[in-house]
Image 1 (cartoon, rainbow, N blue to C red):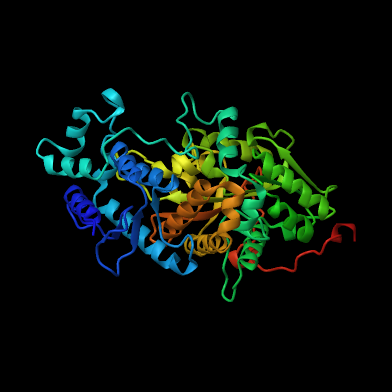
Image 2: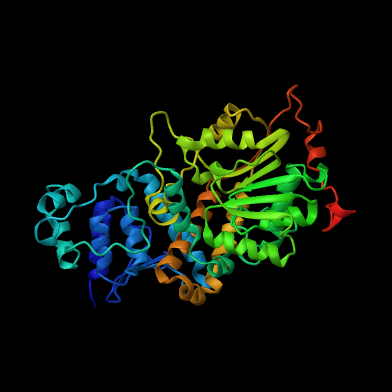
Length: 468
């Protein structure tokens, strides 16, 4: 029996300083590690080269996306539990050993092989046994090709109109059929809301859309009031608001695929006279004022340098007394002096140029823009439930998903959604709905005096009520 798995496990133990919290299987079928531990399978020696050239999270992801590593459950939904447990243990390992993510990436030496100076940087001067093990296992060699799903590093200023369009296109223009498979009939790509008794994803997304409408006070506005939905996705928020609350809606998105499908859905619903979808940046909207603005899962793309401009733009687009509902993922605050570091995997494969801010920063910037913040609600646990449903949807139709977008991209989405579910569950990230008001000239908010009154579950208007 080959000793490759035992040798690799011993190598990892010395590098990490602890026993690897998973079972290893190597390309030749050898295994090492506790039988009850989640399985990490290396199907090709290229996995080791990916990790040597990028000995951190990014190297691991490259090996997985390229197929050199497999994670539990792709061919068996019952193993999703094992996938979550493996990711939980890897996250805990990174938390205990943050220096692992700071190791320098090895650079190419003569003859397209690792240079001696690079090996010393990784292993140190007294690690000949580890180097010998890596050589014996076939880890030393040219850097494997970087998966095509990885975004090449861009240069120049971030969050220009052109660069933001490219970033949004990378994430959202992967095919509407793929998103329908993952999201289900609701086509809502943000945190659902799970009141007691809610059992289906579609019902939870409907509840979230109605929660946003009630927080915006759409049931108190006259028919024909104007709603702007920033980052409108596939149009679900506008469809709900127009059908049930009689609004006239405008949605903006930078995704051509989203805009195309949203327009089709609106036409199918017979709402083209009341809802308009634009392929447009929020900075290009000039036809205010609006009576209400929703921004659901869009502000994460704005960037910290542009956030005050974002907030001021929305403030200027609202009429006095109008409300903004800003639904946004947030991160935990950093320690004083600690720089913000987005996950290399998320930055390179999922949300290029995306940034998360603590909720306190978001509230402060909205207030600087002139808003009065009236309510903040955390939906952190709700997003964990939502993501697990999306992972289950993807798993259930895995073969079709691979046909639609390819194995590499399907793996990216599975890994990022499962990892994010755990991050929400463990309070490493959160999501918050912030209700803010552009008060009138004399400070009037237009809100009832009690929270219960302005959140009351008032009967919604049926379609056509605006004509009554």
